[in-house]
Image (cartoon, rainbow, N blue to C red; front, side, top):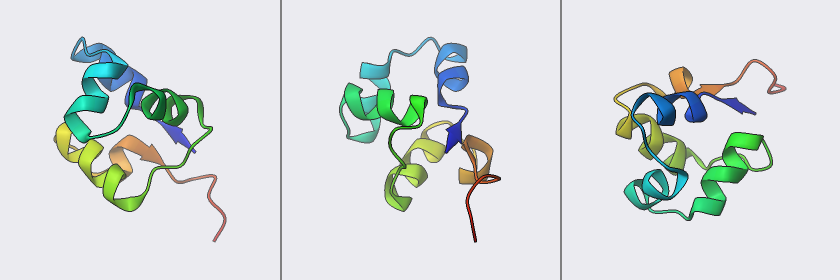
Length: 67
C-alpha cells in the first residue's frame, strides 16, 4: 500500500524515529510502512493520520487494495 508518510515527514522536518515515537512504534515500522513492506493496522493508520491532522484516506492510498 502506498502512503504519503515520507512527504508528510519531510514537510514537517521529522525523522522516522521522531514520527515513530509520536505514534508509538519503532523507526523500523515507519520505514516498512514507507516502502510498502508493512500495512498499518487501523489503529496505527488512525494515529498517523491524526498526527498530521489528516484523514486516513489522505495519508494512505487504497486504490490498489482488492475488494
